[in-house]
Length: 258
Image 1 (cartoon, rainbow, N blue to C red):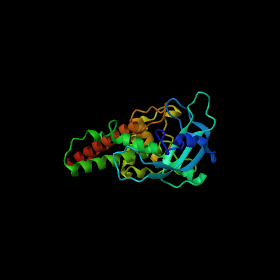
Image 2: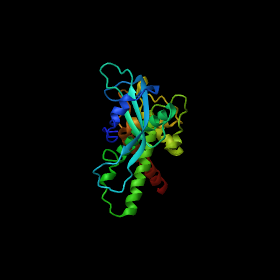
Image 3: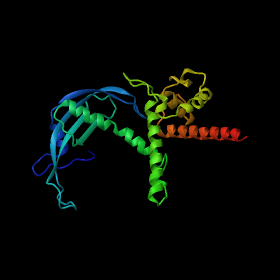
Image 4: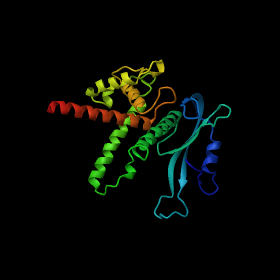
């Protein structure tokens, strides 16, 4: 939700309804770090209710239902640290929410939105700039956009792999995003990019996607010291790796011709 909504005549607004709902459950939550905010463990109070949004009175569409049946999930940080903006998510969903587990599932889906935003960021102006394409023929335009989309997904895989295995999970194999024949070049770049300090060493096994993500991040300009490499840094590094790979291929072909 971006703004409050009317629930009809003589009814409370949507936000007023959410404020009056009892807390249905409390969810332990680790809020990830971002620029200007440290990672923190917190507790989220969850409220939910079925709601019906009435049709707009002055809408341009006349043949619409009288109302849309949805579920409201309200998520609020119970005790934010002093000076920090508390989490407050207000979600409207077509999924049925009748208990805390279903509400938690909707919250988990909502949290995935950031990965989608990063994917589109990689495709747009700061990345492949597909919005700037000036191809009128639909077929080549679709092919180019799809190729960019595949590359953007690979970049997103590298971003997700950068920290190694998730808690209780396993490392993804390097073959998720690279050919087996890419490994010698990745290892050569790694040897060149590693420094003398522990934070300048690649901490991941050579067969893991995390290892390749570290190499691409360093190629993209990440120093290993500050912050975590995002999709644009990964994209720059991945493109540098692909350019080097093409250069090696051309060089080998030239030797074969000789």
